[in-house]
Image (cartoon, rainbow, N blue to C red; front, side, top):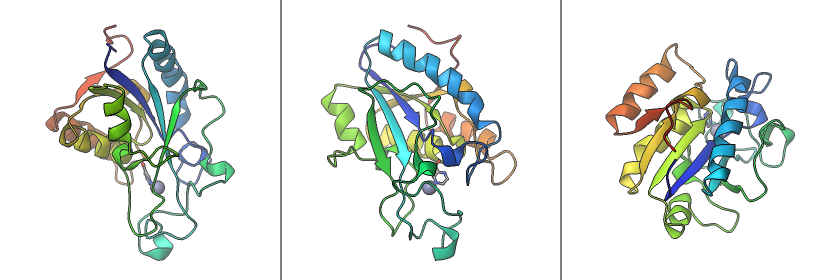
Length: 195
Ligand code: VGL
Ligand code: ZN
C-alpha cells in the first residue's frame, strides 16, 4: 500500500456475517485480516473507507418487490451495523449505497459520503489513484467495484484473503475473482503486500 492509495473495507455488516439475513459462510474469518490491513493503512497514513449496504424497507432490490434478495441491511437497524469486532478508526470514512429504492447498487462507487459526495469524487479529492478493496461480498460488491474502478480512473488491488462471496450459485466467488482479473485488478494477500 503505497501513497496515493486508499483502503476500502466493503460491507462488514451484521447481515453479511453468519447469523445475518445474507450471512456469508465463515464471513467472520475476514475480520481479523481486515483489522491487520486497517493497521497497515493507518501506519502508512492512507485514507480508510468503509462501505455499507444501506437499504430502505421497500426497494426493488428485495425479492418481495421484484429483486433477488431477502430483506437485509435496512437503514438504522442493528443488522445494518458494522460488526463490532471490525476495528475501524474514528476517522474512517463511511460511504453508503443502495438507498435508491428503484435500483440495485452493488459497486462501492455507487456509495456516497454522508454529505452526498460520491466515492470516486472523495478519492480524487484526496489524490487517490489505487484502491485496496476487501470484505463482503466477493461476488457482488467487490466484483462490481473492480468493474467500475478502471472506468472511474482508478487502479484496484483485491485483498483476496480478506474477501468472501455469498455464492448464490456454487463457485460464484471464484468466477468473480477471474472476472476481476479480466478487468485488470491486481490480487494480493497480506503476506505478499508490498509496503
Ligand atoms: C451485496 C448482496 C446484496 C453487496 C448487496 O454489496 O455485496 N450483496 N446486496
Ligand atoms: Zn443489498
